[in-house]
Length: 187
Image (cartoon, rainbow, N blue to C red; front, top):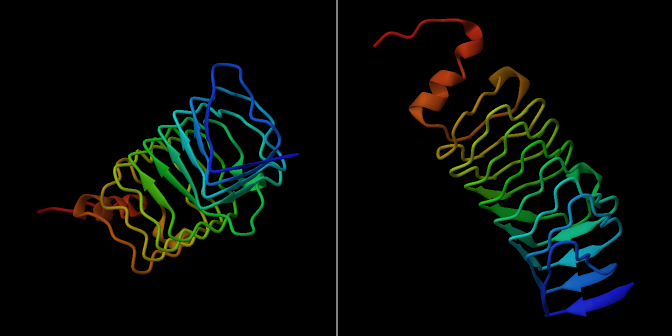
């Protein structure tokens, strides 16, 4: 395994990242759908304009990693190494991504498409979903304490199946929390 520090790596279609440990690197323009990045280590790295759809990340370390304008459709992030796990996502396509059971406290999701993503049994305490599309996103037995949903669209969750203490919602979103009760709100 190689060691890469403080480098800018610019890939082309079909290029693969070399197995190894990456620290303080900027990784751009890699198009590696279905690549196997298992056991890689990424610390304090930024991914920009990468397509990592359906990649394998078994035991992969992501610590203080930022994804900008990336595509990770269909990826099971639940398989990555949980120790020191921390991400931030900006303008990413994260449709059908599984975050199942991950501890993602204070994670920022900004202007992302999270269509059909799975956050079941996650701890998202203090996270934010500003400008995100949450159509079909699954929140079940999820810790959503102090989560900011105010800029999100298409939010649907059952308040009694999740912990939502201190979470922020717009008025419209708050009314949507009552849909399961089949009541009419007049006014």
